[in-house]
Amino acid sequence: MYTETQIIKDTTQFSSNGHEGELVINVGPQHPATHGVLHLVITLNGETIKKVEPHLGYIHRSIEKMCESLTYRQFIYVTSRMDYLSAHMNNHACAMTVEKGLQIEVPPRAQYIRVIMDELTRIASHELWWGAMAMDLGAFTPFFYAFRERETINDIMEETCGARLTMNYMVPGGVMADIHPLFQQKVKDFIKLFKSKIDEYDELVTGNIIFQNRMKGVGLLSKEDAISYGCSGPVARGSGVSCDIRKLYPYEVYDKVAFDEVLENEGDSFARYMVRVREMHQSIRIIEQLIDNIPEGDFQAKTKAVLKLPKGEFYTRVETARGELGVYIVSEGGTTPYRIKFRSPGFSNLSALDHMARGSKIGDLMAMMGTLDLVIPDIDR
Amino acid sequence: MFIKEYLTDIYKGTKSLLTGMKRTGYYFVRPREIITEQYPDNRETLVMAERFRGEVVMPHDANNEHACTGCTACELACPNATIKIITKFDITPEGKKKKALDTFVYHLELCTMCGLCVEACPTAAIKMGQNFEHSVYDRSQLTKKLNNPGSKIREGVE
Ligand code: SF4
Ligand code: SF4
Picture 1 (tube, helix red, strand yellow):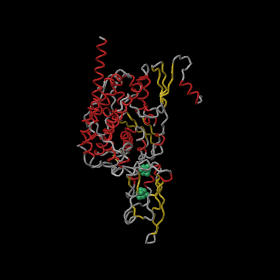
Picture 2: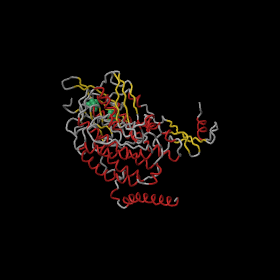
Picture 3: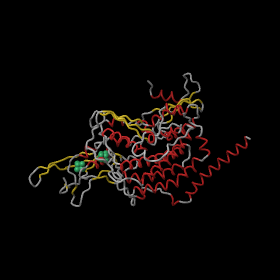
Picture 4: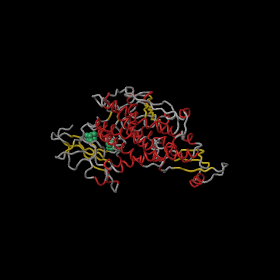
């Protein structure tokens, strides 16, 4: 067992246990570049990274355990607090699992609304990532430009769902309330605004030579490694792994809309960056196809007041902004789950960081972490 | 050869930098496109969205009547034990005993604004309010009683 002082001594001084010249430094848990309470223990040889060890648990709230004491209606709201930038998708996955267990048919109107909301959230999440990514590399202005458009989405969310981040809008059987009368118009206005602004992003950041030099060829992750580390979402697609749940296992109305799965084959930081930027265009494409065609009808299926899942195991997955989120419920037939497990995308994506970073320079580490798009509460839960 | 490459790099770098700066300059001279709200200064004119979930409130009409029957559905729906319903027995004019609401205790400090209680209420007696400025100096001030003193249930609500 270490005492506290020993740990500090061991990790901040030149270690003398046979690894001459190695330096161990701690980044975090309170460090602005980790975007949360992530603690990285980095072993360096000069400026070269030899090992990156993430230490987790600083924001563990035991959401899975908490869910076991909540009913099938109540547990959904907690999942907004996992990956708070994909709150809609988290809620969506949970609602879908309950619907699968109870075999509830979701009305088409609710399906359309859900998908539009998911895609709006994806754009908002990628926008925030884009701003934060540029900020990690020292460019401050893009952050504000990204937030300007993101704010428009948040306003739309606020108007229809009642909250800006932790919406809790998806309920088993549909959505909590019908869309706001101005929703369709506002979304169309947003699409127009976004299309006029997205070129600015390329102008400001993508085309910048300094930015490209810091991204290209850095943080390489091969296709095989991406698969073996269990990466998903834009991180895996940047390495050429086709893994978009929306395409491979379509849910709701994703099989009715035309969109492309964005793939880049380079596997470096720039590829992961480009995947997300191009995904924003695809999300816009999906929303455009749906927004005018929301069918009339109920926004929520009729459900019993008390939901009881039959005995058994249920698993569903959705594509969040970060990758594949799986929700696994074991039910004993009662009103609360016996066990819930979330397969969060951030955790697997983070595990590839060590592999990516070995051998590169310490200055590139933050750029690599930025392209992983980590949300720490999603990793810890 | 090396010098040429070096100079090309500098040229390209400067060019891409200027492209970005042009965009920043564009907004610098067009303050109309700035959307920032000066929040504490615009408190008077700030309008929150109608559905915004800021706190749970119980609307009362002009006769100081509410629609809560004291059925505790909201209490059961709340994931955080935020609501505590205390009931009493009223004597109806016919001399029968009838369950009624005595106190609606609302712990704002435990509330996560999920809106499940409002969804669960069969008589729409509670709704989400738009006020979001909840800071107080003492935690006990956050425990609220939602039904007004002397209020009673509206005629005809079952
Ligand atoms: S909004 Fe949610 S947390 Fe707050 S009182 Fe209602 S059910 Fe409970
Ligand atoms: S507020 Fe509504 S749900 Fe809660 S006790 Fe009153 S009538 Fe029942």
